[in-house]
Amino acid sequence: MTRVAIVANPSKPEVVDARPLLDEVCEQAGLERPLWLETTPEDPGVGQTRAALEQGADLVCAFGGDGTVRAVAEVLAGGDVPLGLLPGGTGNLLARALSLTADDVGDAMRVVLDGRDERVDVGVMRFDGDAREHVFLVMAGVGLDAETMARTDERLKAAVGWPAYLLGGLRAAVGRGFTAHVQVAGATPVRRSAKAVVIGNSGRLQGGLELMPDAQLDDGLLDVAVVAPRGLVGWVRTLVTVVRSGPGHRHLDRQQAPAVRVRVSRPVAAQLDGDPVGEFREVEARVRPGALTVRVAHEAHEVRGHD
Image 1 (cartoon, helix red, strand yellow):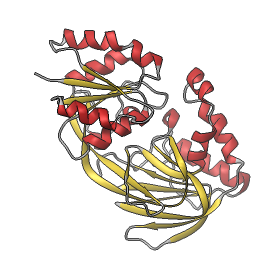
Image 2 (image 1 turned 180 degrees about the vertical axis):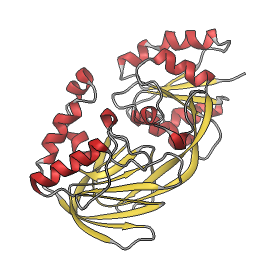
Image 3 (image 1 turned 135 degrees about the vertical axis):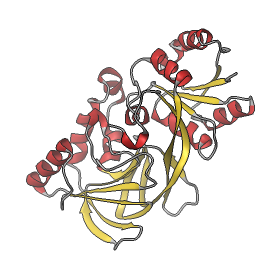
Image 4 (image 1 turned 90 degrees about the vertical axis):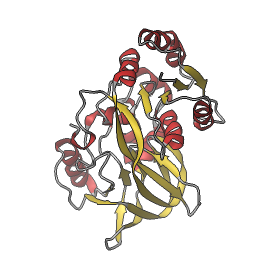
């Protein structure tokens, strides 16, 4: 019998309030009530996931936002225990990339219990030469995207959801850029004046826009986008390209590789799956192909063919 564990972020009231519903869904499926493990400010989910495995869980759900998902995935990556995704945050980035429900917790739990397993790639990133590797599942990067996350008002985000990022993005867009030295594995190094360098396992932004339309969750590659608009014309061309999923150009350079190294001219804000993680001058990222098992809906497309 499946032993389900839920790693939950209690700082989100909607997460705690959903516990009786999740218990009920599991009971209706003929399962025991799920093991409920709450995160803390000191441990966003790593220790709780390890505890779940030690207690015999063979399905671990992340419930509390993209930071919780990353923490759970950090432990599950490289193993066979699947990750279940329960929508508990504003972004729910991996769930959206997999075309899973990001609104109804009960439906998401039913998918977790009745779905099938898919293996997806995992990205890992190092900062300023530090040996520790940090997991990301959807997108990481430096510059505009990270500054947008840092400048977005949490109260506004809680009230209106992802549109709150638009205001944060406008604030960040008027800031100064930086010089980036981008070394993609197997290619000639590129030096650009840029606003952002985004490294993605998926190319889908909030609102369904595709920054990197060729990105696939299971292709064994990372997609790299150097966002380098110059003036109003450059910004307009870049935005139109993203909206239309058009080909790259000098204002939006895209490449694919299993690894990439980015050095910037000054400390620049960085983010992992939408979470600001500080300012750095160098980031290195690589892909771990097929490292994570995720529970998806039976009727979903294969990951490589997601719409």
